[in-house]
Length: 340
Image (cartoon, rainbow, N blue to C red):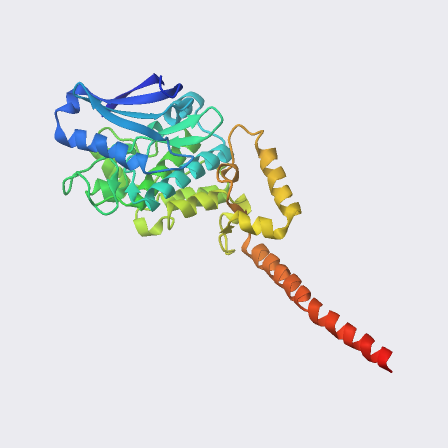
């Protein structure tokens, strides 16, 4: 849909990316509307893992979007150069992308074209999801005709391949394909033609993951690749939070971790907050950031730990609630003794 240039914003003195609609598509109304929608949808999304849109304009019959310039490279280039990535790195990249999709879905936007080329990796390891050019609002107010298939066949969900409406679960399927490719270094579905590739998404099981992939990560990737949307994770946000847990907690009978705000850390006292900060500081040396360091207000703890701490806090409150009564009783006892 467009060509991307690096540029200098002379007003605010910063480097930016400028995406210009290709002249060959400028005369086609549907492309122009989708291009404007990309600016509209992305401008309303505010998340550390989504490339920020600064401005939109039209000049000399050319439409353009001014965006955050990401100092890094597309995930597609990273996988092409390095091949299969380590599972821990895949967890971080997949988790960050899932949190970005969660923010988009919460805002009512389905990306519909999640693929390595649209996932930028900054030099510090931060994921930046970009190119919402064919995004469609969850309320169905899009430009796609009924039965029209829009997306990249190698990352197309089964329901999209069948011409059905894309949902947030469709983005999760595409993210599962991306994760599978990161772990193996190759696309799981790649046939001779785009149509054959799309049909493979509908009918064929994905190739097995390598044996060194930990069971928890393996289970989440396989869940994302479920053919039925209802069998995939409940939401992108939930997937991102699960990927932020220790490996031992990704699967099993234990409930998913409860996500609580920083208020709980403050309530627990300065020693807990200091411990949390020290943990984050230790993770800063890793060039690939963890999910907790990217989502600072959230602290992930096990559910039983939350309940235990709340019970302890309640016990402390009950203990101090009796203090005034005990003081009054002591004074009355002393007065009576003196009176005798």
